[in-house]
Amino acid sequence: GYNWGSGQDSKSVTVVGEGMNRVKVEASKMPGAKILNDMPEFTGTEDQITSKMMTHNRKWILDQMRSGRPILDIGSDLYRPRPSIFYQMELNMMKNYLKLHPNAFQIIKQ
Image 1 (cartoon, rainbow, N blue to C red):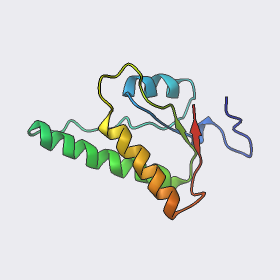
Image 2 (tube, rainbow, N blue to C red; image 1 turned 90 degrees about the vertical axis):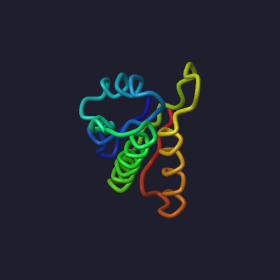
Image 3 (cartoon, rainbow, N blue to C red; image 1 turned 30 degrees about the vertical axis):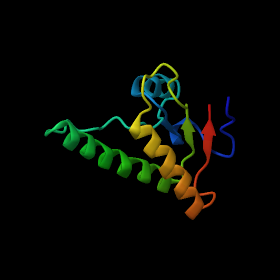
Image 4 (tube, rainbow, N blue to C red; image 1 turned 120 degrees about the vertical axis):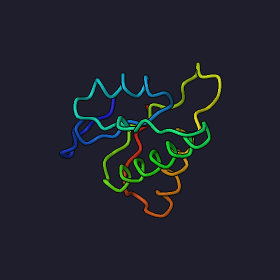
């Protein structure tokens, strides 16, 4: 477990990981934790919907990183047949953001 010390508590953590069901289960253990739970019902072709979802997800993770809240990364879903392009994007954005803004936020691996 992570020690939330120095004034931090679960209300100030963002949870990311592969598979929204896994993320929801983990976040439910921490009242007030933030997850991407406001994805609109996009319409269009499969590619258009994926693109709109990716844009929405990209803006969300950027907002989370800019907030300075710690980000709890619950990792990959080992039972998933193909890696999630959304989770891969989040990992890449977090890595690149920290290169540009060292110590902007903490990633807690689980």
